[in-house]
Each structure stands twice: as structure tokens, then as C-alpha cells.
Length: 185
Image 1 (spheres, rainbow, N blue to C red):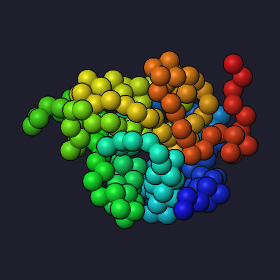
Image 2: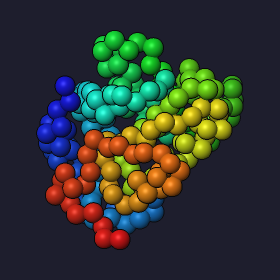
Image 3: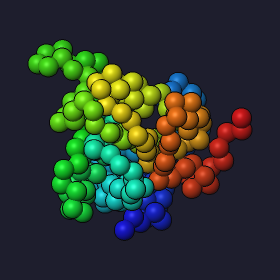
Image 4: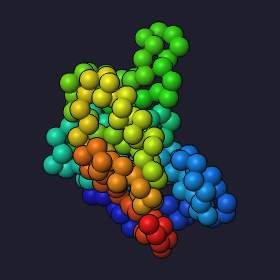
């Protein structure tokens, strides 16, 4: 079902940019992956969502979520595709960078409940900092993280950061899929 070559082509056409960039991690880079150009595009989001569900086959989980704003469209897409594939009870959640200043005052939004087995999703993993924050917040909420997934792994330390917490990372793509060599360690 997942069309990996098409996802690579979409990234090359729409999301891979070259120049001088500062990443969310604070690192400098000569390339940038603007994943919103994929996850806020109908075909792109469908391919990503199908791919993530394929990647997660065999993983026992109740909900999928991550840091808002990067995870927002991905969570919605995965839930829509999951419902079409016969998994209508899969839940989503979003994690705020700051607790909501009104209403519930929560970091975690959505129907997920304490005790759930969850997957953390991110669009691009560099050092893993955003996903590690999401992991901390959802664990504080009372859930257990069983898997971390991403669309693209930049191969700059994220997998190692998750491994240090005994959490596996799976990604649909890596920077090598775009002909970019990972940094030397």
C-alpha cells in the first residue's frame, strides 16, 4: 500500500531546500526538509499516513501523537487512514509546548487516557529534542511509549537519544534517500 518512491519524489519536488538554515535543534544545515509541504498536501499526507501505518504493523498501541504543530496533520491523516483500514478506535493526541492557559490547563490534548500504549510521531528527527519533550509529557500524563516514528530521520543523533531511553525509532525515509550523506561522528 505505501508508495515509498512517490514519497521520495514528493519530498524532492516540494520539501527539500538547499541554502543556509538553522534547525529547531539549533544546528546549522545546508539543507532543510519543509515537511509541512508534504503533510499539508492531500497526496503527501495520504502517502505518509499509509506508510506510518505499514511501519507500525505488528506494534501494539492505542494512540498516536506528538508535539504540536509538526505532528498535527500527521496524527489526523493516520487516524483517517486507520479508520478506512478497519481500525476506527485508534486515538490521537497532541502535546502543547506550554500548558493550556485556560480550560483544562493540560499539555496533552485529545481522547488518550492514562495507561494507554502510545506511539510518538514527528515529521523530521534531527537530535530528537522535540520528540523527547513529547515523550516526557505523555509519560507524565501516565501513558507508556512503545515506539517513536518519523517521516524522515536526518541521522544526526535522534536514534541514539531514543535508544538511550530504550525506545526504538523507525522512519519512512532517511536523508540518504535524497542522496545526502549523514554527518560523520
